[in-house]
Length: 374
Ligand code: PMP
Image 1 (cartoon, rainbow, N blue to C red):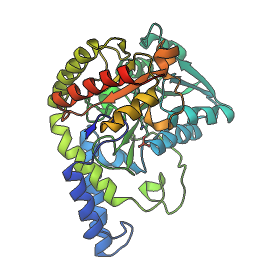
Image 2 (cartoon, rainbow, N blue to C red; image 1 turned 30 degrees about the vertical axis):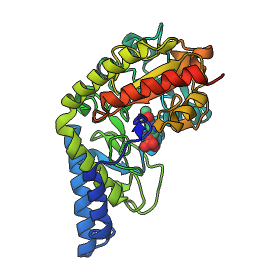
Image 3 (tube, protein in one colour; image 1 turned 180 degrees about the horizontal axis):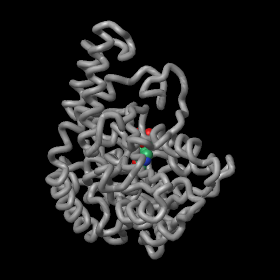
């Protein structure tokens, strides 16, 4: 089996699996319970919180566990606009956000906010476009760090620091799901007040996300109830998956740059293999994340190629896996349309992917292009 769909989800690492198992078998108390079993679960949660906080260069008090990045993005955008959006009604965003941001922005538009979306020009985002779109009426600025469909790295640090200098009142949010544990993600360096993360993209397992909220920034809760997570996200905490995410961060954080170097080499290998297949085009920018590569398979429809590869036990995705086959608007934003857009495959690796796996993928892709119709 060759798994090249790591932007959709990753295999939990052994550390994550054993942390989750320990939480389920030994520390299964409710962290809110006042007895020792409750305290043990609380300690496990605190330890995961500290690990995530350390990885962002911040304090545990700024880390809020959620069910995943979809919820983190909803909480960030709905919660901050509820807290600060009485008078200021404008939100600035990139035009290539994940559905969990974009759909939430559309809901906020229906509720009376004006959303200004910044598009790339000739395939590149300009930091100045974001900064110039912000003004005194802007309440929120949201932009993802790494695009999940093609690995494009958006100029988050430049934009956020320029915007915070000129408009200190604007709340800055970044979806770092595809950047976390791949690029250094430091809350201070990014100048981000809200950061969304997901456990299952970093070998931690599904069902756990994080919202970082800078101290002093207000976010009103979306889910209300028993007041867990300091009232920001009620509901009994998912201790096993939070522990798994913490364990994955502890395992990955020390090796981010070595893993990046390995991914860069694998990407070079993949680019060279793709260049040898007639009709295959690369849609990702050269300076994007090496972990995510978008290619177009010589006009062959994505789904057909995807299932052809699946028969060879090779797993990739058609664009973004998150929208279950629905056409994404992201390729068009980068000027990719028509047959080229209809034949997109997303190949997303880990640092553990091997050159041989990429060779086998390239051979299967070549065979597929030669044998499938449409
Ligand atoms: N943002 C980005 C950039 C993503 O790639 C994803 C996952 N596809 C999400 C948000 C949603 O994360 P989750 O699956 O944890 O809800």
